[in-house]
Every structure is written in C-alpha cells, then in structure tokens.
Length: 145
Image (tube, rainbow, N blue to C red; front, side, top):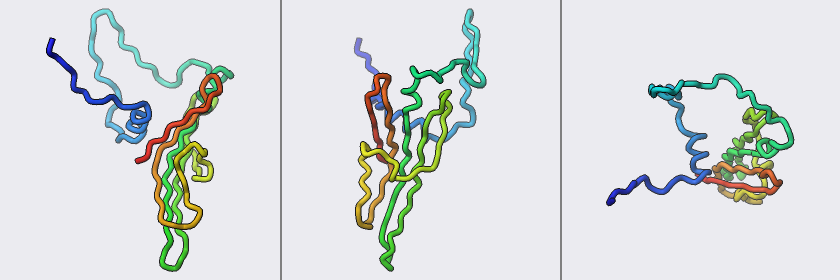
C-alpha cells in the first residue's frame, strides 16, 4: 500500500528498563480518561490482592539490580582516592522493591566491571541486572552509560 512506520529500531528490554528507571518524573502519571461507550474506567489503588510469597514466585525475588558508580585515581601524594556509590535493588516477599547501599565488591562476576588491582585511573557506571528464571537458570544483562 506504500505506507510504512518509521519508528526506528525498538529498544531492547535493558534499554527500556534503563529509560524507565532514570527518566525524570512527570507532574502527573495518570492517563487522561477517554470515554468509550460501554466501558467503565477503573484504576487500582494501593497494593494488588495477589499473594506471591510462595516458592513459585522465587524468580521474582531472585532479581537483583546493581546501579554501579565507581571511580578511582591516584592523587599527587600517591593516595588512592576511590568513590563507590553502588546500590542494590531487590524485591521482597510480596514484590515490594527497595534500594540498599552496596559496593563493587558485591557485584557478581558476570558483570564486566573490572576494578584494577593497582590504583590507576578507572571509572565505571552501569546498571547490572541478574536473576534466576523459574527453572533456576542464571541470567544477567548490563548496560554501561
């Protein structure tokens, strides 16, 4: 028909996760209601009435999100100056999500993070996500920025 959609290349799941996690909050996140005959507008408030505390949902609680911000350099006096603002995000028993302080020492080996043995100039920023799927298989993704 001679028509096409030029929307560009779709974002990968990790790119979408990064975009959602770090975009600026908007003044209102509520959609503008559109009235459609025969449909009733409904919006959930509060927590979902679903129990995910069972073993079948362990894969949700296995998801860990590392927001890694690390740098080091040697000053004029020969002191090694390190900055480590790594945070760990994880899910609780009922799917509640929270952040906790962490460090690059806690980042899994699957990450491409490679802090040098000696204090040479080094900087690393990334979001690293790892998980165990429903069958117990390990997976991970990392996005540097």
